[in-house]
Image 1 (tube, rainbow, N blue to C red):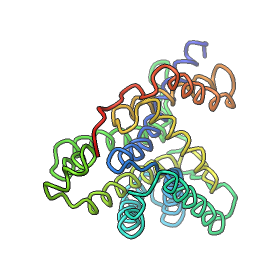
Image 2: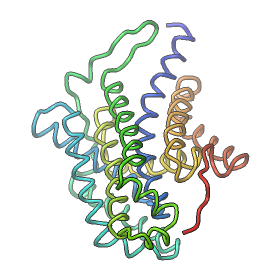
Image 3: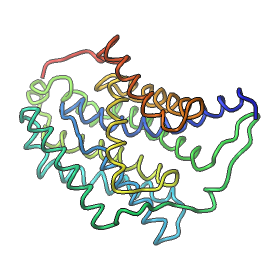
Length: 293
């Protein structure tokens, strides 16, 4: 394989993993865009999705993709119930209280993962794990391609739903102007719960998609949370197109760094992009119009 072929394949692999990153960041952006809450436990939701994917494959023998709708449904319901029971009480709290609460929630979930599943990595190895396609100079891993395609379908489907459905417009209205939303009769507590449900479902779905690609351990959440924050800052807070572009950009940057320098350089490149973006365009590539609450 020539150097050009190596780099071309690295870009393609980066785009595929970047699509899954974008789905994770989309959930974080939706939560922030509507509630103005920064969920520091977002990475833990991804890990929950990974464990759901592993459990479904391990105990049912079904293909890994069969776990995706299960993870989506479980995390959607969990997100809705959590927000109605606990999360809504913290929406109007000062930011430092929100930070402490969600950091504590994330650490608690990580501890529960360690107690229930133990520290050992758990990976999915089915027949699809060893399948790859040869397309010209590209060698495409089937599991990665399926996960990326599913992530993009979900992202664009979610965008369409948020833009054209009445409920999606209610979420957008609440994010644009909370007071105005209350005036026109939007049930804000329900909207917030639905927002948390969608955001956590995005994270859990991404976890189920990425489970065949990475061994899951309780301590992966920190990495996913940081990656999601880097993406939303690079792409723009509360910007859904920014989440997609930022995810693809981070995915390609990490893949090229791993191919050109070493796998350990991935984090260096991501943090470097974050610093550069904060210096030249702090609002991100797609900074949305600021509105009153």
